[in-house]
Length: 431
Image (cartoon, rainbow, N blue to C red):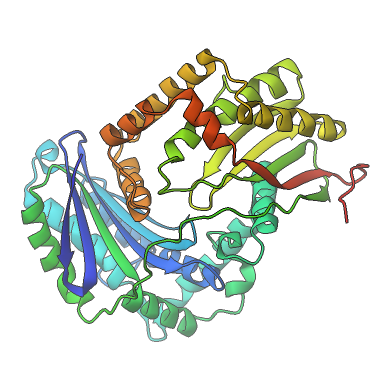
């Protein structure tokens, strides 16, 4: 699995992955921005741009144009990757051979993606005022609606508390107050500044001749990108060890089930040669249905409706989440902490280790089963200098021993415990 890399006019980085594995040709465009104050303003940009282009200013017209490209799928959203916010755009079309088309289909797909990003629908005041107003309201509903999914909300609050004062505390869509008073003219200025200064990565996954596609992409995007002076964000910072705060935070709400979310420092993040070993340790702890959290908290103790853990490699952190009865907070927390300690001290059966490695191998293979996972895997891992192809990742995984996984787990320490409980609960938050 190799990406061919090319530099296009305007500082656009083109990465081409040639494969005949898929029946579609996929293109993804990412604009890199630092995550932080004002993230809601920039998150609004792709939502407005996807509504129409100068050539197809009405949403219905753009939808019809996509349908004429053999039912092309168009995508635009904001994504959080560590301490970066990515404005992500994409289009997928059938590979020409499957629909009896020629290279004009590829050219049209690239041109549509270019138009969405570089030539959106406008009126006399800038980006169309009606689209701005509508998407502001839609984004407000999305942000305020986080509270409706109590598990998601608990994680949102945990990240806010654990990473307070750092860019990572910022949600991918920012906050409503970021754009509540934002007008058409100001959002247009935000858009134009982003377009002029953001690092821009263009990915292509399909059965292409990379050199030919690079020429075509330069022809399509070159005039639009001319004059761009992208900022150099530099490589992402490698996470280091942090001192645990030992905080417990309790929120009360009208809820039917308690939501427990625990943030832990691991001391190991993306780019660390021990990360594969940590991934195995996390799988043993709570990554899968056979893992300690699921088996001991949910199955044996019957304390949780769900219990699992995941790594946040950009921050050197891990998160444990569980849905529990309100009265079971302390007991569930004790058993969860006991599972963390069991992995730390090496109380792990060979079968637990072997089964975890087998499941992780399966997940690595699945990462190459769609254009989206191929692109996101490369984008994330290449930023941190990690191998992104399945073969290299499998070699890394196969080199992990049980002893190495246990050693990687030694640095896991609990930082913040967050509990969302009912309003009349007796659980208290320490001062």
